[in-house]
Amino acid sequence: MIEPRSGAPGTIDREIPSSLNQLYQEVILDHYRKPRNKGHLDEATHAITMNNPLCGDVIELMLRVEGGSIVEARFLGRGCSISLASASMLTGRVRGKSLDQALELSGKFTHLLHGDEALLSDDELGDLRTLAGVSKFPVRIKCALLAWNCLEELGDGTDEDRGSA
Image 1 (cartoon, rainbow, N blue to C red):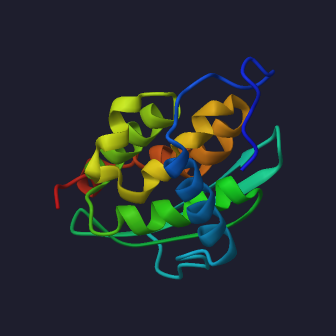
Image 2 (image 1 turned 30 degrees about the vertical axis):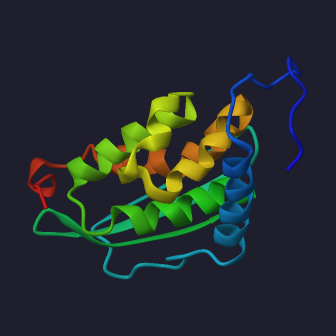
């Protein structure tokens, strides 16, 4: 991975361990090349499409919520490796969670990408922590958060969808 120069335009100086940078690169490429849960969800109870007009990324997130739990999550989209990898990772992390739990995870992930280094040790984030390197490139944060913004919008649904798992 090319490391940004200190003080280069569009970068923020944050110390991300080199081992995490290597893992970051490998995980993103794996999810980009072999996305999990990519495809249409026929029985979706919630669906939304959002785009990032700055770079052209488009993500459609589809959820099937039953009894207050997300039982299935899938996505369709096009865009950069970061946006598609993040969408792939989201669909795996939210399955089995209530919408409230998924939104809590989304909040943590958002804070991580905005530089909250304390979250690097949060086991609940799992492999999402490998995207922490995106925080060094503020313009790419929107790419990584696109699918999560979809989740946030879907989470504004009715109260009966928000039960605990």
